[in-house]
Image 1: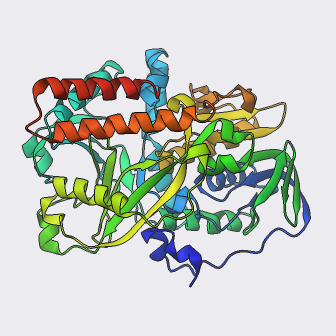
Image 2 (image 1 turned 180 degrees about the vertical axis):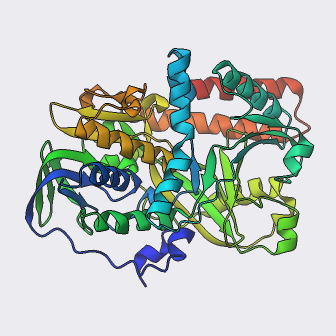
Image 3 (image 1 turned 120 degrees about the horizontal axis):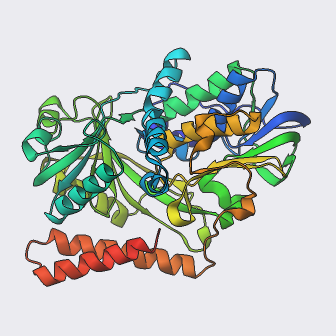
Length: 468
């Protein structure tokens, strides 16, 4: 059996035979060398070739296009960037609005590309529902979040409060207190998008070599076991696999996302749940739950993942009983009718987290390196923005893309914030996650006394603040 068939539900659904392209076996000269055939690398290649078709662009991929997070995610195409509110708070109002408009336009930009290039990736722009459920503290936090959004200048057209009855018109979940609805999100079949982009860029003249893991890289040079690319620009587009290419691992922490998919659910079950338009949804707890209804009527459901000591990558994504149990518990609390539903697929992937959870799009002019990463689990959309931005940075174009607070137009990679050394990383991560688990256990128990609920929230909020 092709091992790439077991990556995720999304990869299992492909008609693509998933045969690897030839590996790099020569010494090539290129204008741009891209390491990694995931979303960031492919979007960068796409916009480079659209704007400067004469460029020779060479991509090298350790496995096959979509093997990493691009073929393993939850399928949210968000018009957002991790930490956008913090990044845009300090800029003037007009510039802040331009930044939000740029972010909110991501799903439409992707939709225009897939239509132009005939990439069928089940894209449905149904928006996203951030729901308060299970315990009343979620409503308090969600309403506070809405106040922060309003203070940033975002209107009802961007985020609208839904009372429980209004929410039920879109999504029916147990013990709902309300929700925020935003139209700036779509859902997709992510493997279809990444594989479609790979075929598309090849049609534009990009040279893509697979089964070619990079063993060494430096300014102007990318080396594999059997080949070499000398290039004017190098784009290390590896996100969650940064630990494999020093010194990127100092700035990108690999964490794992973990997801399950149910069997296709019958029409009467979906009549009791909703999500008729392909909306994404999440529950506003620090357990980081998220989901969508797939085009073949499965519920796709994820929750917080993990971190391994030393930043070790996870390769075996057969979920443990505890990992499956957490997702079954959370899903069952939100949708009691699904407590005993069968999971046909479970999977995960390595994603990249930047220090202070601040994504970056960077041009190191001196070393001719362009880098985009730190998406922190929101990369399906952010990678499109990153690819467009890197293309403009490499081509030296002036655009609205480059006037954003997450863009470092002339900065060395060494200037990015570094993660603390071990064991501080591991101890800190686990202390934070345990505070989140404890908070959820206390708040989900209606018998927890008020003082204990307040204490659990205070501790979790304090621990969360240490992440920023």
